[in-house]
Image (cartoon, rainbow, N blue to C red; front, side, top):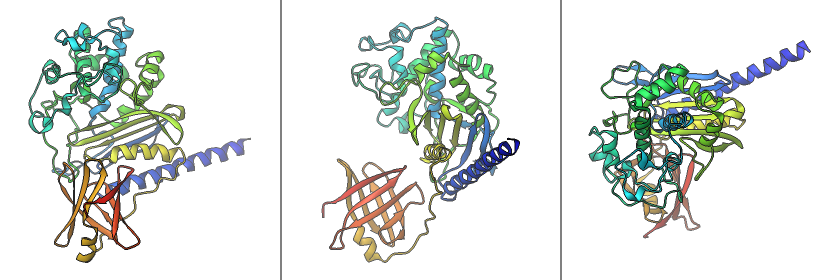
Length: 441
């Protein structure tokens, strides 16, 4: 029996080592292509299988990312806000069925039917302030108090009857922050610190104020490596203002599931898929037929992913200080790899030069969906693309009719008919494929 147990433990260790090697090689391939800079943690029952930083936390000072680097979380913040609301409910200080007007006294009459429950799961119908035309271009550098943020959209008509539909809504979570402050008598960041961070020992988690001196805080970058534009951090507030590390997030995810943050009954409410598989600050999904809960985040210069596969004792945290789809893809693919899927590193794409005639043969307009067209044309020896409402982007050939971008995670394959003329293209991006028929010729 002792020999069998020894052999079993050896096999398990080899399996863990194999996962670590494969997972590291997979992340390496994103870094190689210039699409990922950040930190990754994969933990099984609290023990790290992969815990490593890639790229630079600050490119101007050549400071590398590390497991203790602090990153802006973006919308991962929402699960902390939801948990804070539920703690207040457990203390008898509010009910999830309370109308929002009970706590936000400037609520218009059209909000009469909107409850805290609707805010938590994005079914309120309120217009999201981040969806206002030109918001990030015109408003994102202006400091505002929470009530001033709400006022940006509170007089606009509801987009639908409360509870009838789900539409992701940052304004709803700004209102939840207002509720927390009203009920607790404390500022949002102070309440989270006292009620969530300190009891769990989350010393590397807090509100990412621009003015604060925050040790080991990463700088944020655009997909092309340039500095991300300034965002006043009063604006994300309870919808996306926190910073953390992969280690703190792993502690948080396990504690939340175990009942150490809110009761297991309330955690069940957080993980109930109401509409569009959204609960309270958490999204329910299946990866390799295993139930997982999690959330991603995107904010100027940062993209993030936190996934908990509780039945498997697995937590995956991916924090990137470079905008792009890498954090989401890496997080999901590492869960799938652990669960047995053969996840391979990204293929190496080498640029080849094609003659002008071959580039001209793929030029044209391709409709990916009604009203959304990808235009393709040649400028000198370079093939260019531009999607409706977006800037132009150069793409490089890897073979005849196969192209890729060095700036974003995208590949294009052109398909030809029996006569040799291009009839359509397939856009491979973000783990999805979109077919665009050639139009206008």
